[in-house]
Image (cartoon, rainbow, N blue to C red):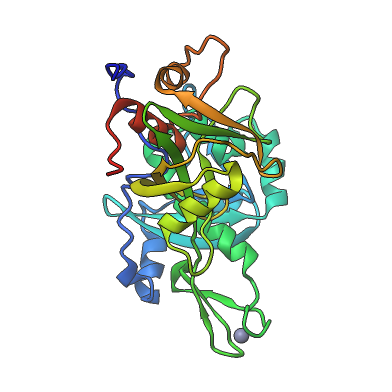
Length: 316
Ligand SMILES: [Zn+2]
């Protein structure tokens, strides 16, 4: 077996290792929440649909605003409490998306989407996890304004962590959608695929939503069989990542490929093929002779692929 390539220091996985203390037990205490809103150290992230509003800086931008300043930016559609950072309350405010759009004309602000912010490193990395929390939660509110049981308008309660229906009394909780993202491997080779929406040089892990009544391992095997026709045996869990586009949780795995012939589902994938370890190492290092790349370091796919290149993945 060839020696493992040196890929340098491990970059941080985006949207993880949050500094937020969620203090969920305080959410139902309206007086405590009101006090946190008027705390002099309270700050808010500002979200407008898919856009995040940032204070423009010289090198990197600053994504937090005082509550008064955030509210002055436009019509507030929703406000949620994310938790405490070093005892300071942190909120997320949803602006009317049309109002956020008009802010693009301002010289003192930057209005852009969270993917670009993360990939291009436009803000300090510690802001990514609470922004993921806020964006996912605010998107859930925007899409769940009516009770899914009886159709009546529902109300946000518990600082944004529940919606209650006044008509049928059903309580609705924010949803997280689990997605498996996996690398099928066999010895010195692995399978990478390309989605139709990828830029032409990028190859990544396979992925798909876990269905009701399905275990993580079974979803990995089913998605791999459906997308590339490979039968998988053992599945090993690697790590997970919140993915707020809009409300997913990526569950990263390695899978033992038992078959070799690839049959591509052309609806799901533009292409898929086997890669050897050396070629994948060159892609991770951005040194591939044909310019092929893996996803950026902020994404869990990079880390799943890198772990296989660098370390022994234990698939029994
Ligand atoms: Zn209802």
